[in-house]
Amino acid sequence: MKLSEQHPADKTVSAKSFFKMEEGNATAIQILKNEKFKEHITKVPALLMCVSGKIVFENEQSLKEPLSAGEYILIAPHVKHWMQAEEDSQLVLLR
Image (spheres, rainbow, N blue to C red):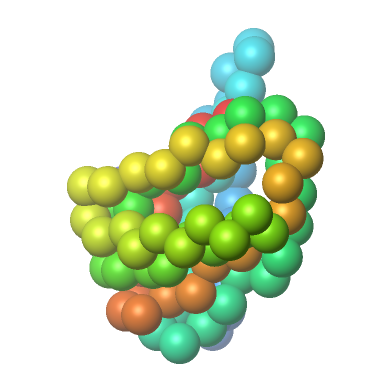
């Protein structure tokens, strides 16, 4: 299976849970080039891993971190954050 197959072909930004565990889940995220995953907040700590492509992760605490394939970032709870894709990108969010 491919992460990209989790998303409709016509959606430029998409998030879909694809694996649920007792204490968390994994979400496949697709952001196409020059698109933005809008601002949001998580209530629990999370890990965002870039599987392919390149994004810039930002938060309200002035953090601005580029992520490429194989790189990840820990996301603090209760902090507004967003992402912008510099290339078509596939990500996995664990929380």
